[in-house]
Image (cartoon, rainbow, N blue to C red; front, top):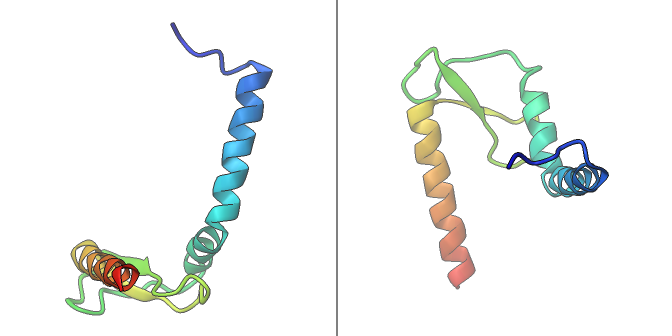
Length: 89
C-alpha cells in the first residue's frame, strides 16, 4: 500500500527530520555551497581533470583541496581511520 505523502502527519514529520538534518550538517551544507563558487582545479595528486572539492575542515568552507574520486576516497578513508583511533584513546 503506497504511503500517503499528502497527510499532515507525514508533512510534519518530514519537516522535523529535514530541520534536524540541516541543523546537524549546517557546516557541511554551507561548505558545499561555498565550494561551488570557487574556481575549479585539477586533482592535486594526479592532475586528473575530473576533480571534486574536499574540505579538511568544514569550519573553513573556502579552504578546499581538489582531488579526483580515487584520491578523495583515499583521503576520506584515512581521515575516518584517524577519527576512529582518536576515539579509542
